[in-house]
Image (cartoon, helix red, strand yellow):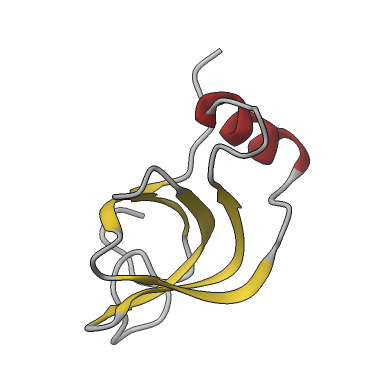
Amino acid sequence: MAGHVFHPGHEALHGVTVVVTGQTGASYVGRYHEQVERGVVMHDVAVHDGGSGMSLDDWLARQHKFGIKVEHKQLIVPAAEVAGIRRFAAAPD
């Protein structure tokens, strides 16, 4: 249902699994809660910082296939770190 917000009074992405791309090269996958002055509040978050030796695309594909490997129950990605936010979707086959 286009434009439907599950929780009235919240942003359209509230409760949706998203990828937040960071200015530092890190990426964050989790459920979007809200964007506040401090940054983006997320729940059940996994973080890709390049340290795993896996490319971001491969890491995202793995998160999609096996489920998000939660590292943080709640995380605020600082506003200065946020480069972009998009829905988390499977890569095309």
